[in-house]
Length: 335
Image (cartoon, rainbow, N blue to C red; front, side, top):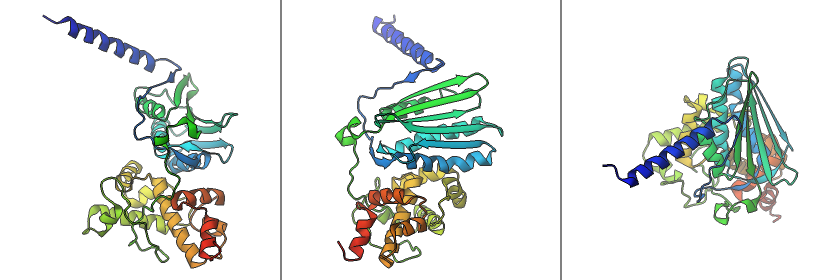
């Protein structure tokens, strides 16, 4: 005989299933998946608009290859705020990859990003003219957005397409202290024995990435991981001054898909593709500065593939812990 306890559990499971089904089939709904513990969320101060443009630019080639019109607009052009760049990058890649699969040659995609009047949150609106999105397939994205303490809603308009709206808090006080990434210098994530175009500089010692350090990987006997990193670093180095060298071209040069490249870089370095390339570009900038400390910051920024010297300065400080002007002054003996 079935116990009353088992019957009770069965009823609860059935009710939960019905609720989830109803949520996934509502035409328009804010999705909130409260997580009691935000373990692993690491937010840091970034130029969010530059980050969004860079991340979207990395998939622009994919849309263009499929004959899909892709447009993006941000307002303001530059905006500092606190985000988990790794998590937001994954959210965007998942959404845009799904969008690319659904659209045909006449497809159109528009991305708009803007802040509210209080400048304490950012809204990212992604619209397309494709068929209705599969909300069950987007469930993981809803969880990821909620994990970032944000909200997401999706609407489908008959014969017009889909609109997905993500809202994220960007103020420092929106997150717990343990979720804030230190603003002190972060270790370079590039092996010191990789030959670049100009003399190398010393790496901080003792840095770790996951279960093993890159230094260990590169100093170990020849391995597939070692060869992969050498090739990846060489690809970035060969295109160091090209501002339009995106992840699609990078993956093509590596002979793999974007997702494979992303996962492998993430596994070996703890970085996404953009930050991996950024670290190499900043390290090269440091070498250029050592070689000629009288160069202007903007000159070096352009030489290492940054379109905007202001964004270069933000990235430089994130990697080295100081502003490029301070770094140059120390090299000239002025500090």
